Image 1: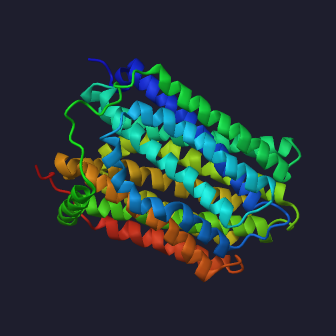
Image 2: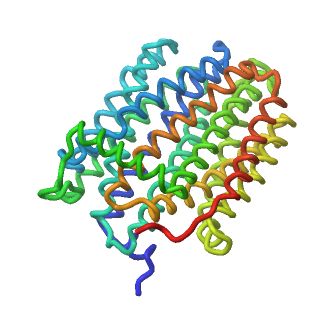
Length: 421
């Protein structure tokens, strides 16, 4: 019997879909690195938690509202064309972003332009996910679904690291950010062109596939929420993933403030940016380690015990890392929070798939996406209110650590019986 991993990667159609995802998410990473360097790590711009919170809210919350409705269009339009034209539209959306960056304008115009680019991106990601079942045999579907987002996240992290290095190699400053953004537009074009290697019908929707109306989507979300509320293991799993997103939102912002305003001279933005890149790389390494170890550990001791254990360790590590407030300790905090988050995500996705009926699964995952986006922004807003200048890292560290540990201990008390069929 062929191993699911070998079977998934052995599908030419899946490999083509994966190439589109990796290229597109590499562009996302470059875009994020260019914007971070322009807005948060420029000597002439003073970082503040309030400004960061506003940016996160602009980028995450609008899509959280419209995200569940993307399926309405993805069930009507050929997904191969969505991936082609969507990536070209993302490349075009870079034009106003490049213009405002070149003008040194980090105001509303840049925010709206970036919002458009991010919105297109999330629509494309939904299309990529919807196409996966048509590219691999059913027995390898779970493996294929695990490979794609993990590989995409790693591609985005690596590209972001390259973008930061390239900007500095070009002398830093806004001019360097403009060059990175121009290259980002080119990467999006490549991602779109990769979609032309696939016939327009191969990614669906299939003939006769039902396309819902917006009213039906709302009714479906209501049905999904009702079932989710009564299927406690799935509901609790989503709550745990959301708790980690609150911690990672709060932890990222306090780390930016500490590195930008306290651990480095205000004018030494390049060093602060390099240190943040290392911290985020540590978080990615932690996530990769969790992705590799969680399947074994969840089988050995169960998904609830494993998730709870990672949260308790992450809470201690995050508290120590932020309270100590050194570069090395922040890297440690990033590592343990990244590990716990990926462990919870793998276990949470599995519990949702096991406990939610097939007819409601897509609706519940749409609600899942909304929950984690709102949680991430909530963590950022929490720091903006509690410690807007990063002056009291110990208090913030205590809140993050206690929240993670308490979540782990509470989750440990929950039970999982046999899934309802």
